[in-house]
Length: 186
Image (spheres, rainbow, N blue to C red):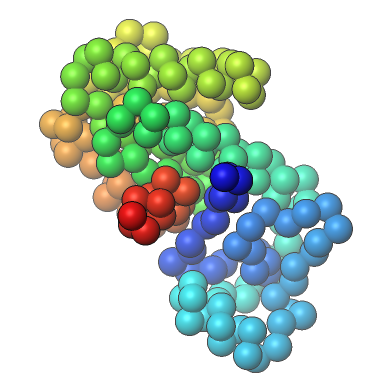
């Protein structure tokens, strides 16, 4: 079974004059100005308000970096899911903070499980992406793995509820994860 490409489900589509649901390929340049009224209506129905600003368009290298970061974040979420992490979320926080692009948030229900989630994520990042995390090496009530453009937070339920990053970064865009849609279809 081929892996699904990650798709951002934007609450409000305001991606610097780009109408993107998938990272663009090298030969694809999507411009909202090229869409007709029916296509704009379809975008509105599916994603919400389309905001056209006079901001400069994102450079293609910036879009590529975002696509790489998104793929990495989704892979880290899938790794957490493989070891039964709970309530896994990926948030696009790039418009809200200057120091990272995505948060991966997961819940572990015991120290061994938090350790397993963290170890699985670190191993996958090193083996598949050649990246090393800064941050906690031992499981804590809030374990943080900082990959620069992606920051992974692994919480115990009580700490997750207390710090409530999803509410604190309430304007962040929630990324739909491939394993979530598989669960809903079952």
